[in-house]
Length: 116
Image (cartoon, rainbow, N blue to C red):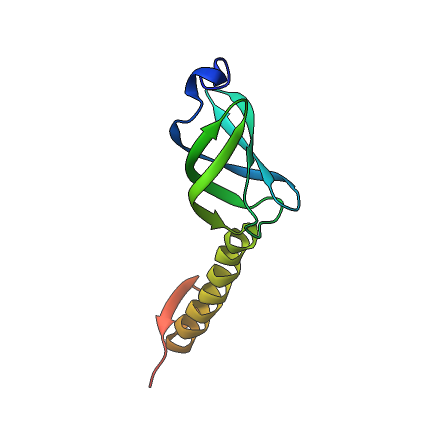
């Protein structure tokens, strides 16, 4: 709705989120989805962001597609990948602890407790 009539929303406090698609010196562009339509918003901020970062912005809308941020939350694209790395490390520790207490019997295809 805001992209169809941007001049009627000029000066409104809005909240938008999206993925960083372009980075400039004093601004960056986020791509946001609304009802299966992509919108690009220019964010006037010198905040250090990188392509692929997820950004939530609360700020003043300026026609036609600029937002002057009051508050911003930036989630680095790398932090999403680190979830998988931590999960793999945790899984490895779990497997080591499990096989210290249990052993696999090939004849019956069962796990049996190790004797202490």
